[in-house]
Image 1 (tube, rainbow, N blue to C red):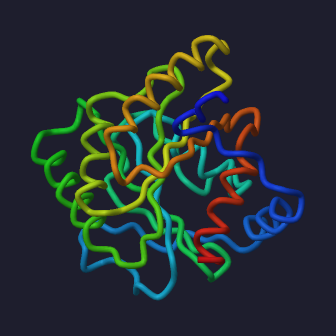
Image 2: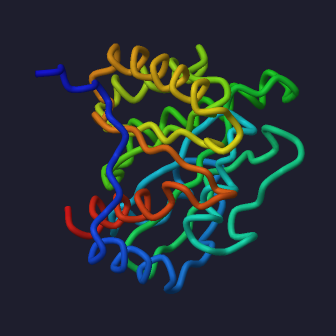
Length: 221
């Protein structure tokens, strides 16, 4: 028997789960607020999932693809411009949380440090956070700055799941190479959920899978 692959790609949902998730994300989704300090967070009255990733990893584009709305999350031409934790209400049942991009070089050091403090405080202190989705660019794999965030999530005991973005931008052999590199990196992190989701916001690949995962962990527990 062959040894199971560590961190396999998540399987597509069955038809019932896919349709339930599609309906959830086709419902009301509204921007709630942008938060710049912990005391500005909405009440912790429902489960939430957050999306974290390096600047320019395609985070806003992925959130827009998940929700089927072209401009719900604002993509910026300047990496690192989003300085807030942005909250979106998912059908009054859960929150989608867009975290500030990390790993940018152009922002002033004090600004970067402030964002990092806020990020750490949020990840360590939000009791309703069910899972963090850490976005990794399929073209580049796990970088040192991604490893730092993953280590922070280990320390905070927050389960995180890697979502590979921009899968359509790389050839299959290169995609496999980056998946192998990512799997090796994840084996060092105890908080890593043992499945990877591969997505393309442009082509729609993996979007139904990720929707079903979000629905399952927020609404089904």
